[in-house]
Amino acid sequence: MGPARPGRAATVRWRAVLRFEHRLVDALCTAPEPERRAGVERFVTGTLADMPEHLRLGVGALSLVLGLWDRARPGRTGSELVAAMEHSPLGPVRQHVRLFRSLVLFAEEELAGAGAPAGATPASP
Amino acid sequence: MTRVGTDVLVIGSGAGGATTAALLAEAGRTVTVVEEGPWIDPGAFEPFSLEEMARTYRHHGSSAALGVPPVAYAEGRCVGGSTEVNSGLWHRLPAELVEAWRRDYDIDEFTPDSLDRHAEALEAALSVRRLPGDLPPSSAVLARGAAALGWRSVEFARVFRYGPDGRAEKQTMARTMIPRAVAAGATILPGCRIDRLVTRPDGPGSRRVVAARGRRRHDDGSVGDLVIEADHVVVCCGAVQTPALLQRSGIRRGIGRGLKLHPTVKIAARFPDVLDHDDVPPYRVTEFSPAVAIGGSASRRGHVALALADSGVPFAGALADWERVFVYYAAIRSDAGGRVQALPGLRSPLVTYRLTDSDMSRLARGLVHLGELLLAAGATELYPSVTGGPVVRRVDDLGAWWDALTPARANLMTVHLTSTVRLGQDRTRTGADSFGSVWGHTNLRVNDASLVPDAPGVNPQAGVMTIAARNAEHFLATT
Image 1 (cartoon, each protein chain N blue to C red):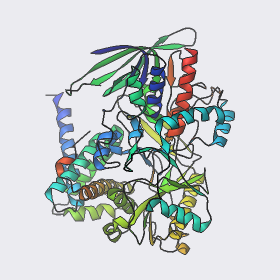
Image 2 (cartoon, chains in turn blue, cyan; image 1 turned 30 degrees about the horizontal axis):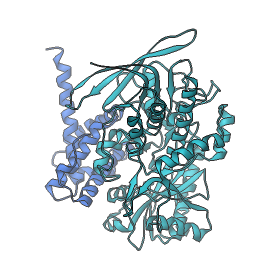
Image 3 (cartoon, rainbow over the protein chains, first blue to last red; image 1 turned 30 degrees about the vertical axis):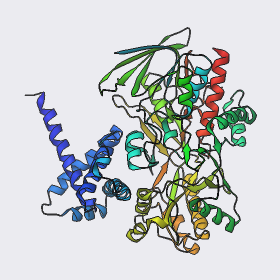
Image 4 (cartoon, chains in turn orange, red; image 1 turned 180 degrees about the vertical axis):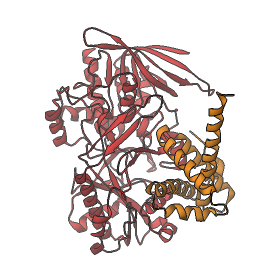
């Protein structure tokens, strides 16, 4: 049991990170079409997964903390979450939402421009 | 496990590696090229598109040199390296910089004339030429603004071949030097990452590479160990990955320090008329060169959106009108330096870069000059890549950007990284000798952007290939 605990704890933490990041991407994405939204999510997920490890670790750690902060405020909508992060007095929080907004915006506009189906964007290289 | 034996192992297939492989193979050497990324058919993706970023850029293009401010950068990771994803602009190294580097780093046989001989041969091979016909609208903006202000400007040549129908085809390494290398008998192994070089003592104070160890991804998706034994090893993985590989192999002296890049600020400029968005303008304003270079960036719909968002002000109206918006840049030669440091247990190195106060001042000057130029060319709105930087519509308002561009608010990027294994005979400031032989090693060379002694102030592909051809010639004459 002992050796398994750290792995399970890490998995739980990582799921919390991914859950918060999924919520953030969903809140930032303005495309109405489900296909384009799925394509955006695939691109953002693929980009985050492909980041240099030390950068991904920093992003993941902040997502974990922000996820806990978000869960302490039940009922808050996605747009309220984004607004709170954008107006945070803490620079790293503002940079965090800016990173996600950039990824979402780029993918959203490119997919709109291409008129591409979601499947046109690979999950990872 | 895959075991390979070869005369020359070239690690990396970009501008430096492909040039090295082609010239050595054509001279009769047995050459094996390993490339971490996949083989992608040239032209498989639209240039600068989402799919191209996902498939051919390292980290989907999401790398950054950490510092205040951080500098985002992108590298190619496929056969052909960054030549597959760049704009293909061709600038010979400025003669005054070549002379200065020769003096400062004590580089043997490094003169404008000696380099020009190699540059001419490469230009013929790569079909370097100017765009046929009239300047596209995005380039005409730069020409018009420069003419209005009395500033020097010039159209640059590119590595493009144009068909009878006017269709342009970028002459990347996968279309030029790699096929030449293969035709001469070289073997190209995509999907191979070299983790470290194994060295053994080889005389007093000297070591020799006896093997390169890594992993190979096979066509069926399986991954296995890879060991390559070679008489000579040439590392050509670019200014970030080359020092990282050497450090992982225990080779650290003069390696990874002194990283140089061109910090770049951008403006999303809105015009009354629709502009072309399929290509990067082959046109530069050279009035302030080499300290500050002004030109145009990739401006697909996604890039326009990103550039508008960098301003941190509402931009929905401009984004809805994106076909009339184009992204232009000011890039500086910076006083600062950076560092590449391999981290134990991690695949990616830590890259840091510390801008100086004078760099920030130069960036602000470049931003204001770029704003002047774009307004003179007829732009109606300018969105700077400065968070909270005010949108400018009149020249009188540009002064606000001087104070707005602070380390905390600047959004910077670059695509030109150099100088992490400088060449020259001054052992205190270089990682390799005048022809790229790594100090203290008898059969290990570097032949890529890492060798360029300082940021050249222009796109480095021509300089990298020219130096690589020069060093390949020296290799053939001495081994």
